[in-house]
Amino acid sequence: MTKKSSAPKSPTKNPPQKQVLLLSCMDLRLADDTARFMDAYNLQNRYDHLTFAGAAMGALHLGTPIEQSNRSMVTLPWKKVFFHHFQVAIEVLRREIKDVFLVEHFDCGAYKNLHPSADVRREYERLSRMDMKLLEPIHAEEAAAFADEIKEFCDERQAFHGTVLVAIQTLITVGSNAPSEVKKLFRQVFEPESTCPIEKWKVPAAELLYRKLIETELKVAAWKDIGVRAYVLDLKGNPIDLF
Image (cartoon, rainbow, N blue to C red; front, top):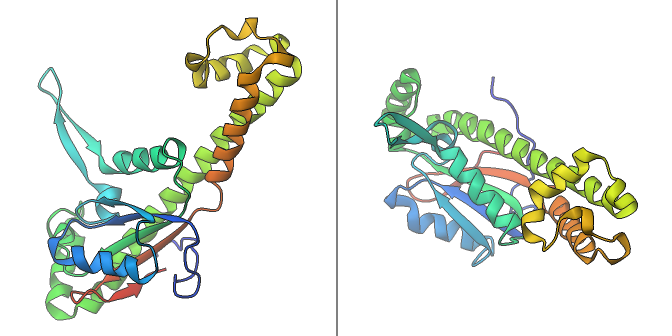
């Protein structure tokens, strides 16, 4: 049974108020339709765009083989690329992303040829020859699974920055008397940016601490309440809401 992902309503009922991270397929047939789909919801110049073969399915299951110096092969999962981009967009570029759009499409070559399950590949090919609309549950299942991973990633980033925030608050309060694990966490996250070791800071004059406090509060808020929405486009570019 497909795991239901908690997601906002359709943008026609609840249009995005902030910026969006869009994940779509690389298929050249739907490039213009995808842009028109986003434009229809007044998202011009308001979204970052990542493309992988298979969209959510590709990001969930696929990867790029990389040869190591010893000539052995390892695989870089595409989901790592997706989540690294997502993190950079919010934490470095300070995008105000509050919605992630997963835009799939019918008759997807990645599902037919690259899906890790041979059974799914055969079933997708069979249903494609019958009626494209029969493919909707397959796309919905893959999108829902990846949506759950996106939600988990957002929760993890929010929790991490929440821990950092507590560490900063502790340092502001007790300074050099803070527990060693608090100092260690702060060093790992911030000390490369500072001009002197943490032990030499004076609490009343620790301007860097207060600056980092504000920055970290913003990061905690940035990862809060990010929703995931999924759609599948037919071959005419018409969108169908998946969730």
